[in-house]
Length: 85
Image 1 (cartoon, rainbow, N blue to C red):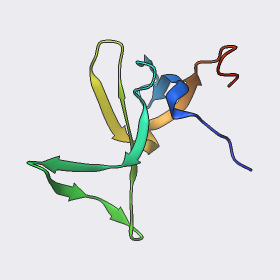
Image 2 (image 1 turned 90 degrees about the vertical axis):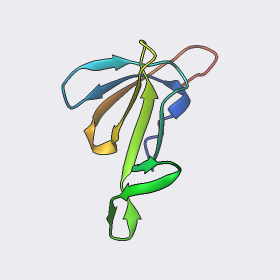
Image 3 (image 1 turned 45 degrees about the vertical axis):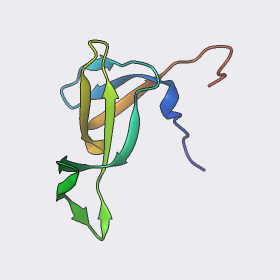
Image 4 (image 1 turned 45 degrees about the horizontal axis):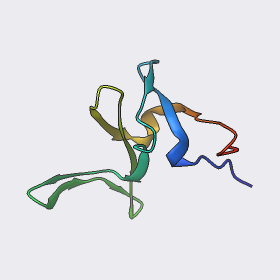
């Protein structure tokens, strides 16, 4: 059994600074955490042959926020009659 979190419904996240960040709906996603420059990966942190996971979202001020998944403490999901989430 798992706790399903639909990325498309995430509307706020709680980060390490203990502040909730309101985000643009549909902008949140999780993927490998790496840095790139000129189309090349310049830093890719590997542990046990697997990349660290990271997150990315656009906040309400249209600023992109990215970081390691470990810095997320909680999520708020948009729930309405249409999504039934």
